[in-house]
Each structure stands twice: as structure tokens, then as C-alpha cells.
Image (cartoon, rainbow, N blue to C red):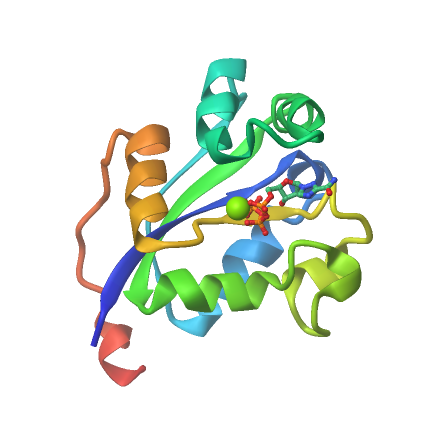
Length: 148
Ligand code: RTP
Ligand code: MG
């Protein structure tokens, strides 16, 4: 069993549309464990570091503008294969290609405003947890985990 940690973020569109609770609820009900969370007005340098791999893309400036436009809700979640499973629950990057029942299919229309971010690999999960939370996580027993 591979217990992993991942960084998820409700983007400004999700926060403004009141979807934090819905999104947190989906990951709670799945059985994953929330081990840190905060509402953040993102400084430009943080957004640029977070999306550094995309710095040569034509949409990079717009992406940074969007992420810094109003607060995001950053979270660290823990659980078996949480990195890949969270990405599956989010759906494809472009909501028009996201499968029914995924967050992006259920709540979004366009690729630029697709509600949620999730780390795409163990390496990026570690990098993003360090970048957004200084690596700080809470450790506690969640007894229900033994049933899932
Ligand atoms: P994310 O990093 O936000 O979880 O999204 P992702 O892995 O599914 O997609 P990625 O390739 O990392 O792209 C990051 C975000 O950039 C925006 N994007 N816009 N205009 C475009 O063609 C375009 N392509 C990507 C999206 O908001 C995407 O989530
Ligand atoms: Mg990505």
C-alpha cells in the first residue's frame, strides 16, 4: 500500500463560486485524510514558482494573472495512491474533455478556469507541499481509515 501526500488547490473560480465545501467533501467522502489547509491570496512569485514548468507556454501570463486574482484554498491530502486518484476525481485539464462525475466536468466549462489544481507526480507533490506549506502537515489518527 502506497500512502502518499498530494497538494490540491481550489482555484479562484472555485472559491468565488462557493465550491470549497463541495470539493473538500468529495475527498473526505472518498476516505482521504486532510492534513493541512489554508486560504491564500497568492503572491505573483509564488504562482510563478508553482507553475514554473509552464513558463514557456503562451498562456503562462494569463494563468499567473488568474491564480493571483483572488484567494485560493490550498490543501494537503493523504492516503493510498492519493496523487493519481485525486487527478482522476478532478478530471481532464480541459473540462470539455473531463468525464462525467469528475469535478471539472461537473463544475467547469473552459480550460482557463477549471476549478481545481492537483499535483501530477510524487516529485511535484513534494515540491508543491514544500512550496505552499513549508512541508508542514498535521499528524493524527483517523480511525475510520481502517475500514477503507
Ligand atoms: P493543474 O496543474 O492546474 O492541476 O492542471 P493540469 O495539471 O491538469 O494542467 P497543466 O498542463 O499543468 O496546466 C496548468 C493549468 O494551465 C491552464 N491551461 N490553460 N489555455 C490553455 O490551453 C491552457 N492549458 C492549460 C489550465 O488552467 C491548467 O489547469
Ligand atoms: Mg499541472
